[in-house]
Image (cartoon, rainbow, N blue to C red; front, side):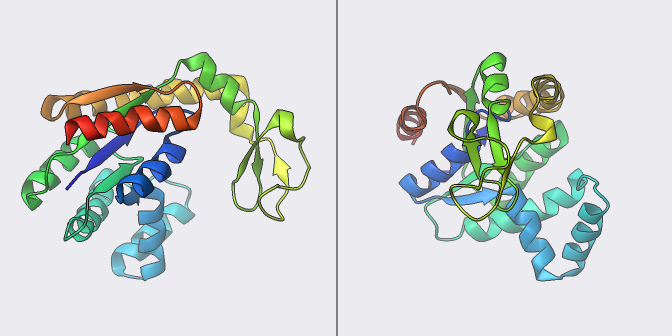
Length: 216
């Protein structure tokens, strides 16, 4: 079994790499966003709690998130090739909880991969993109302009309010303030491998794949 925790700031290409790597290695792509959506769709008592929290525009608390993560990993770890955890952990308590969950469930320790991209590159990437208002597809500004139809669906392209250069820099500061303690906690228990996130997505995928193959 090959288990992976993929970390990286917004704009690092983490979502793209998670999809590519999950497909290449036959891993279950465990996305926190999808976990929350699935909980809401399930209409369980837990799902109703999640729905009310999200409807209020609040963050799901760490203890509730850990219950969802435990349930998900316990399921996907049975008989599968492994999983790739995308978007989690984001805080030190979540990192501590993840270590405890894997130990409790007897799940093989993951390879932790951090995609590293300089801040100014991320600012350029995020402030240079247009987002589809229907399905969140992303298009480079040079390939279209605000108000154009999305090339992937029938939505319209717009510039997100949080994609201005100033806002992106602030998002990076907030992200690092929360995730650096999480990364440090994971590093106390498992090796954290940094991978250069610059260049073509295919090249980044190849670098990460090399790490996973060497670690397995």
